[in-house]
Length: 162
Length: 162
DNA sequence: GCCCGAGACGTGATAACATAACACAAATTT
DNA sequence: AAATTTGTGTTATGTTATCACGTCTCGGGC
View 1: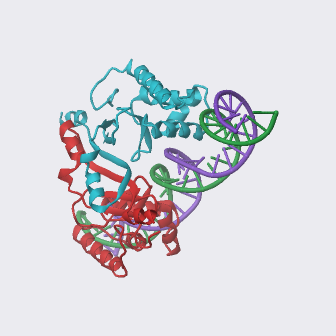
View 2 (view 1 turned 90 degrees about the horizontal axis):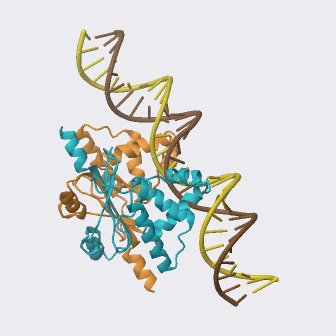
View 3 (view 1 turned 180 degrees about the vertical axis):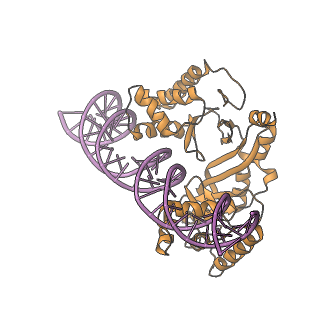
C-alpha cells in the first residue's frame, strides 16, 4: 500500500501535522472552542496516519498515550472534530480521517481506493452538486451530505496494468 | 411521522408490493437468479414498510415468519437483494430499503429526513454527477458511489412553519 | 470567598451492527 | 454414484457505538 496516500500521490508530511494542528488551535481559539489535550492528540493521530482510522484504532493510540481507554473517549473526541470540520467520518468504512481542507466551506467528497485503501478528499462546489439540484426540485432542505465513491485510484490502475 | 413516506408524498401502496415482487420474480428468473422464499420475503418486508429498516428489524420479521432467527439469515438475503439492485443500503443509517427504481441503471441518491425519518430515493444521471467529474479529472475509476443527504423534507418544513 | 451550572473526561456496562466457521440439504455436473 | 455448487440454518464471535454515572475544572453571579 501507498505509505503516504494523500490524494494518491507521494507526499512528505513531516511538517504538515504540526502546521495543521497549529492552524486548528488558532481557529478553535478564535471560535471559542476548546481544543483540549485529548482532542488535539486525536487530531494529531489522524493527521499522522493520513488515512481513515476506525474509532477503536484511535482509541488504542489514545490509551497508549495515557488518555482514557474506553470507547466514549475516542468517540467524543472524534465527534468534536467532525462537528467542527477538522475531521470527517467515512460512512462506507465506519472510519475517520482528518480534513484535508480545514477552514474552507466545502461539502467533502471522498474517493476510496479498494485496492490500496487510500482515501482522497476532493473539493467540491456545493452549488453545482447533484444533491443540491435534487434538493431544489423536491423542496428538500439539506443539512449534511455524504458523497463517497469506491473504486481504483490512478496508482493502482497503473500498477494493475503492468 | 408520515405513514407512507415515498418520495415525501402520500401514497397508497396496497398493490405495489405485489407488483414489485412479481417484477423482481420475473427479472430474477430472466437473469438466472434464485429469488428463494427468504429472499422474496425479505424484499416484501422492505416493500411493505417502505422505509429504511435495520438488518435486525428485518431479521425479527423473518423469524416471526418461520425463517431462521440468526443474523446471517437476514444479512445474506439483504446482500443478495442489494447485489442485484433490488434493495439499497443506506450507509448513514446502517439500514436497508427496497429499490424504488428496480431495473433502471442508476446511481441511487438518497434524501433522509431527520425529522420524520422518511427516506426518498432520487434518480440520478450518472454521467452528470459530481463524482464522475471528479473521477475524470483525477483518473480515479469509480465502481460504486454513495450519495446521501440528510435534512428536512418538504412535509416537515411545512409542518414546522405552522 | 462560595455556590452553582456547564462542559469535559473517565469509567463500567450494554446496545447495535456484522461476519466467521461449520453442518446439512437439494440440485446439478461429471 | 461421487463431486460440486448453492442455499439455509446454527453457534460463536468480532466490530462499532452509546448509555449512565461520578468527578473535576472553570466561569459567572451572589
